[in-house]
Image (cartoon, rainbow, N blue to C red; front, side, top):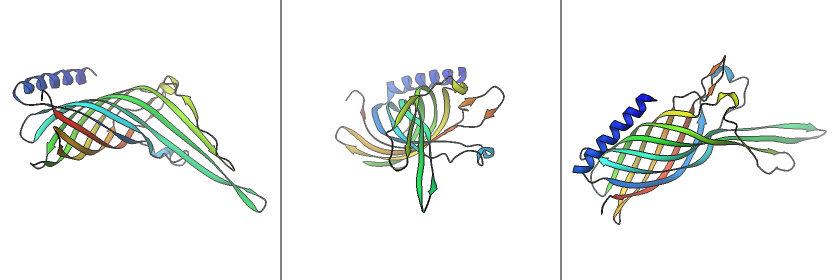
Length: 230
C-alpha cells in the first residue's frame, strides 16, 4: 500500500508538470461491467459453476499527454464486481418433471483509482488506441441477491453482504488492459472502449486456508472528453 501511495504521488506530480506545457483533457465514461472470479481447480467437483454477473461502472478522469501519441489517464471510478451462480434441476413427479432452480448473485461495489497509459495508434479525427495500467480499489459494500424458480418464479430477495464474514478482503489491486476508439464531436471527443481487469488480491483470507479467489471482469463504456480551459 505504501508503494502504491508513493507511485500515486509521483504520477500526480508528473501530471502537474505536464499540465504546464500541454493541454490536458477532462472527461467521463459510463457503461457495464461483467464480473467474474477465478475458481480453484480443487473446487470444480464440489461447487457450482461461477458465471458472469452484470453491473454498472463509471468514472471521471484527467488525461495529460506526454508525447504526440502517448498520454497518462488517472481516474476515479465506480464499478460493480462479483459473480453469479445459476443452477437448476428437474424433480420427477409421476409422469412429468418439475423444474427447480436458484439464481444467486454476489455483487460488490468498489471505488477505484486506476492510473492508465493511453497510446494512440493513428492520427486524425478518428483514432484507435490501447490502454494499459493498474488500479487500487476498495469495496464500499455488497449484497447477495437470490431468486428461486419452479412452477412460479420468486421475486428477488436482497441481503446486505457482511464484509467481516470469512474475513473478506476489501482491498483489490488489479491490472487493466483495453482497446478503444475516439472521434471528434463538437468541442471534444466521443469515445467507446472495452477493458479487461485482472485482480491480484485474494478476496477471502481464512485463518487456515488461503483460497485463490480473485476478481476478474470485462467492461464496455462510452464517454466524452474535452480540453480543459477551452
